[in-house]
Amino acid sequence: MATAASLVTLSVSLTACASTTTNSTCLLPDYAPAQEALQEMEGQVLSKGPQGEEPVSADTLELTGTEVEEVKAEKATAAIVMHYTGDDWTAAQLNGLRTRFAELGIEVIGVTDAGQDPSKQVSDIENMIARQPDIMISIPTDAVATAGAYRRAAEAGIDLVFMDNVPAGFVPGEDYISAVSADNYGNGVVSAHLMAQALQGEGNIGVIKYGVDFFVTNQRHEGFTDTIKNEYPGIKIIAERGISGADLAGEAQNTANAMLLRHQDDIDGLWGVWDVPTEGIMAAVRTAEREDIKITTEDLGLNVAIAMAQNTAVAGLGAQRPYDQGVAEATLAAYGLLGKDAPPYVALGALPVHHDNLLESWQDIYRQDVPEPIRESYVECTPPTN
Image (tube, rainbow, N blue to C red; front, side):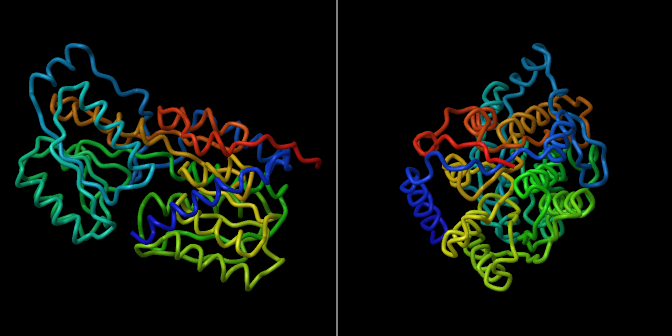
């Protein structure tokens, strides 16, 4: 609750200061090496699956009209077991899942929120097994701690489709239908190129990663740091810390505060592993009155979108497509009901988002109109002079 309250306060404060940024200099100057690299990434998926599988595009998934009718005749039920809810990414996933399940005549009998607690998620899984759904869509909070509970679900005859993470020891095609993910390594790469563009290939940066061994966030961190180290020798990572716990925005703010205090004028940019920690980074930068700091991240949440609309703090990010991911997961669940062969790992390509394409990107990602706080915060900016 404290985290939720702080995020609401952050959103209000960001919206309130929108008018101060009108006609400011855009945060992304032209920088050919980064811009060319981003263009080359279009249409590519760089991530491998949890067990090294080659990615298959979600665009290749399809059901014929006859197959859809066969699924509807099953009158199947589905349970959705989440790691947590309440953020924009989860809301879009659930929207995509519910929309596609409705098209397929599959009833969603429950959605759970583990609050990032593996023991709570084990209890959620057990409760859903007792309700005997035909399908379970889930993202494990901990691949090891939750594996036994998911094993019991599979043994109960429930078709499993995973988002992003897979329980330890599970084999695709045997223990579960498929796993669906964003191109998380690619999103890390995108945010690295955007950081390089914002800094013109020169500067010192701090990295704030997720301090838990979680497959997709590990991929983001690796994608970002590999790209900075291998492609931009003029940019140095001078500080790196992991965060965990219930208040990720607060932890990230404290960590960013420490980095800014220790390195002061020697630090030019900060990277956050996704949008919620990045909200804490934004707060630290604002408190330190370091408007010169460039921030990049992953995931287009409301508060980072407001900052980007105002042309403040967040220079750009690599975005997932959570609505489309939910649609893909529901479609793969139908594959299971039909006994249709499914690819073991399905991925959706990374989308670079920045001030110039923010409004159209929001609609593409969420399949919804741009929220008023973003539209009201949007200001024009002046391209910087190299």
